[in-house]
Image (cartoon, rainbow, N blue to C red; front, side, top):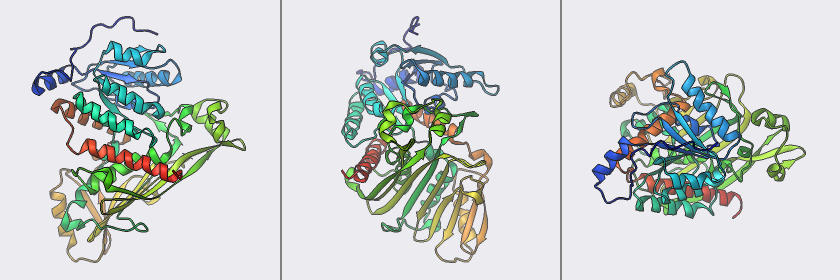
Amino acid sequence: MQFIKYLFMILIFSLTSCGTDEQDNKDIMTGLTLMTLDPGHFHAALVQKNMYDAVSPEVYVFAPAGDDLNLHLERIESYNNRENNPTRWEERVYDGPDFFGQMIKKRPGNVVVLSGNNAKKTDYIFKSVEAGFNVLADKPMVISHDKFPLLEKAFQVAEENNVLLFDIMTERYEITTMLQKALSQNNEIFGQLVSGCPDEPAVTKESVHHFFKYVSGSALVRPPWFFDTQQQGEGIVDVTTHLVDLIQWECYPGVILDKSDIEIITARRWPTIISAREFSDVTGLERFPSYLEKDITDGKLYVYANGEIVYKIRDTYARVVVEWKYEAPEGTGDTHYSIIRGNRSNLIIRQGEQESYKPVLYLELNEQTPGFEEVIDMALLELPWEGIEYTQINDTTWQFIIPEKYHAGHEAHFGQVTEKYLEYLKKGSLPEWEVPNMIVKYYTTTKALGRALGK
């Protein structure tokens, strides 16, 4: 279908104009209109799970016709029709073969939302900021070391055009991670971050995901290209983006990092093996598409969705691991493990059977310290979250009990990231460390993939 008519462009403006920053930012916040570009991943819809005061309900979708577009529109419709707190999005769709060129030409909005085929994403990002659009992009922004220089250039062009390029780092809004970070900055609780070594890093983050899952109450249908690492990206450059980001964010908060701060020690990759029936159940296709033939052995699909990186960031040794399984056992789901080691204590997030597969933060002292509960009490009083309690497990271990109201859930984090991005748009800039650290983050993941591939 084609646009019947553009009603009019909502407060046409140029971020590259010569007006004052104050006026430019005022104009932005009174005329924000989203343009969703080629939404192939359900994260694109999660950005619209809620309404935003500063954003027009009209959203312009530019995408090729097909299942990816249809599934995206169905998800938006489900949010509009839900019983509790329904949204009011009005999707204006252009699905012609020249959809990207038409977005650049028509310019009905000023913020591009990107979440889809990762092989195309870096080019989409560069051409969008080059055209003067702000971009809110799902991770990963780049999936190969060859394309990394284009992403670096995109950040440079975004700065020249006075637009904001930002990626969706949802895990910064998970309450146990936020509490882990906050306590690690408390010298009485944590001490100082140790350096660690390759065999026992100072920080380790592990993430287990599943191809078959439920999203917004429905079984998730994944596009078949999601299983092609040339289009989706290998696990070592995909989910590890979150883990590398958290290490930078927690261990070096507010610090401007550089590529020279990173040294890859080891990197490896391995496949998840998917049967034809499992592939059919999660994609709805009866057979593997031809572009996956290169990854099929004995009738089964080998997806290199798993990876491990051991690296050094400044003086800190770190390890990240991502694993993909087909389906979680009943009553479980995606899981996260994280440990940050200090010279006084370790802060550990576990999400196993003992925790009922919900993330729980533990504090483990390196040596017994009488009266340490008073130290914990004082630390909790300084935090912005009321009602956090703890229970003692043994002489050196405590478990934190976080009120349920702070456990927003993964889907809600997309709205929180978007709200933060809107704040940055209003201000007209990102924190000074965000762009250089995004560059370092993607340098780490793509460099590690090259190492794992023997390049």
